Amino acid sequence: MAQGRVADYARCAAWAAESGADAVEVHLAAPDPFAEHARMIYENVPLAAQILHRVRTTIAAPVLAKLGAFRAPRLLHETATRLAPWTNGFVLVNSISRRVLDDEGDPLFEGPGRERADVVGAQTFEVASRQVVEMLAWRKAGAWDRAVLAVGGISTAERAHDLLREGADAALVATAALFDPLLAVRFRQTRATAVA
View (cartoon, rainbow, N blue to C red):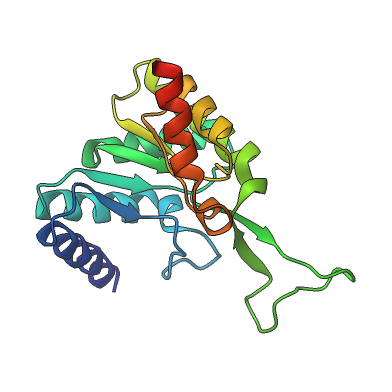
């Protein structure tokens, strides 16, 4: 059954490459359907490595592995080190899994298995940026030479600039664009002004 999931990732990556994608992001911060307990695919390192290997050997375009939040810097390092041979870079942090409760402390979303949700947006910046900085420190220490793309809570041009100054290869706008469609435009304008 896992081989079917691996093949699905490779098939989707091939479609993206055939459509002219400059790079293909492999979303590993998705629930692992084969896990006995709730976890994400990137937390199942053998499965994540299989997926990246299959994608890497299927397409010629650069492959970026999208990861979620790690519980400890050591786990981040170990996972990135094991996945690095099959990727050109890492995108982090997709979202932060949290219990979402109402005012009485009960799960906000109805139905079994819905007590947790992936939280995105400006409030994730502290955790997301810390993980990006940790990843950059491991790269600087020589663990591997892969690109590091920051995403997660980048809701202002200042936050994007901060992560680029830290050494991120790119700062990606996600949820913030829903609330501020011109955020990226303002960022580019302030960056151009700073360079001029």
